[in-house]
Image (cartoon, rainbow, N blue to C red; front, side, top):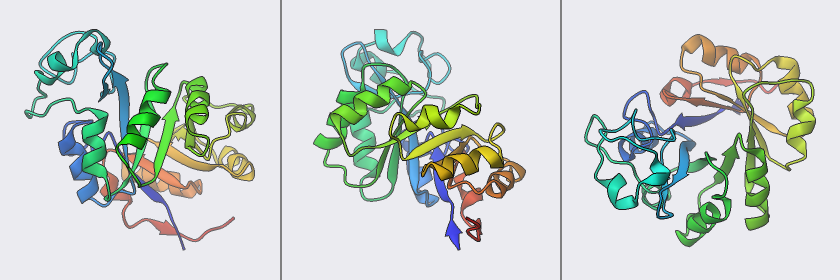
Length: 232
C-alpha cells in the first residue's frame, strides 16, 4: 500500500481562518504530513504568512502588506480575532509536529526564507514551492539540498521539461487540470506529484485515480484514510 501525503492548505483553512496559527494548529491536530503556508514580506523586511498582496480580504485593515510595518500588521485581526503570523512564529508552532510547505509569493525572499528556517533550527521536512519558478533557483543557491516544488496553473506537454530544469523533487498541479498521462510523465521524470486544492470527496477520489503522491486540501482529514495499491 502507498499512502498519499496529506497537506493542509493554508493550515486547515476549511476549519479556521487561513494562514493563522489557529488554522495551522488545526491542521496539525488533523494529522497532516505538511502544513502549506504563503510567505510574503512587510515594509520593514519581516517575513509574514499571508496569501494576498493586501490585508483587505483577511483582516480588519487595508493596504498592501509590503507597505505596512510589522508593528502595523500585528495590530490587525481576522474575523475570529487571530493575527497575521510571522514565519518565525509558524516555525515554532510546527516544529516537531509536521513538515512545512512554504509557498514563496513574491520575488526576492528566497535567501531570507532559507535563512529564517535555518536559524530557527527547524528539523522537519521543508518544501519550498512557488509559481515564480526563477525564485526556486535562488532557493537552490541558498540551500543546495533544498526540496523544491514547481507549481503550475496551466499544463502542457512542455510542462515536464520546464519543471525538470529547476531540479525539483515535486510538482504541484491544479486538481482539475491534472491528467493521468501528465502525472505518469512527471513520474517518469522522477518527480512526485501533488495536486491542489481538492476539497470535495469526489475531487479527492479523482486525484487518487491519477496516482498522485500528495493532495493539498482545506479539509485534510478527508484524505486521512485514503490509501491505494501502488500501480507503478
